[in-house]
Image 1 (cartoon, rainbow, N blue to C red):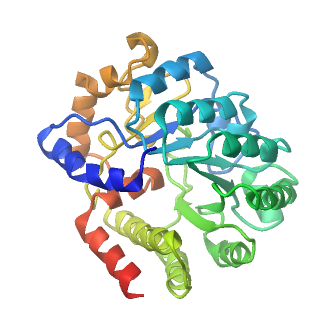
Image 2 (cartoon, one colour; image 1 turned 90 degrees about the horizontal axis):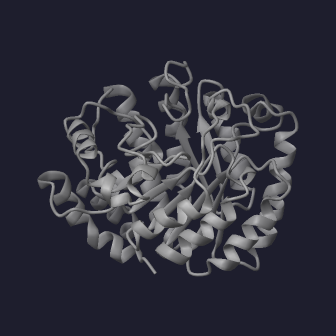
Length: 361
């Protein structure tokens, strides 16, 4: 199985890859999007409008075989992942072929089949940490309004309760609550935090709403003003800093604070304030087989159907090299959470600060 120690050992090689274009490395952090289909109608996302000629399970298996044991962290995203009949099989195939350390699946928590499907994945992937993050953008009708589905909050609570019960018998299952901070709820973050504190969930995470090609939200005014975000997130940072965490949670929460501080800087400075490793250490494979360095720019590096599902053929190709040059030249910037956490792992000052927090507190 991929271990975190093994991931940390690869960091110097990714840094060399970014600086010198050598040694050639496959990404450690992969997002798979089996389908954009979704049963939410969120104010912050239009992905539900998309329809694609989606990869079949057989095609995904060929892609995973070409990745081998390189990925440590898989995210299976959507749309709504559990709306797709492939999700369980895809998670199991990723585990069997690639042996990742973490499989992360976000969900809107609407479907009644979610607990049964989560149990199947957790039981069949015993040596991977399975993280299920339930979306929560407000309490009660506020959540329903932002998510565009009447009764969503009640279904969220039903699903959360069922997953917490499952967790008692599945030691590799972790349950998270995930909030997208947008113009629609930036003033409500305190009450969501308070709810998450007593919910029984293993973690509470937030990310900021942003324009993304993947979500068809480029140009939409969904990102909160820097001042409003900073005011809300500073209170969350203080809340996290004053709590006592044990074990791995101490490390993850220390990184979370670093991410929130990073987002504040990006919003204020409007530039890439930390070297981005999207295109080197992280990537996304979209539903139709297109490989992206990230879902914000969504540069088309090539389609896996055109290269017999050989991921390295695209990853080490000329289009990917050109996009990497653009990213390295800081021609883009964003606070994308998935890529940002990978970037933080490659930033020495961040690692020093995290180590001090973990060891001295």
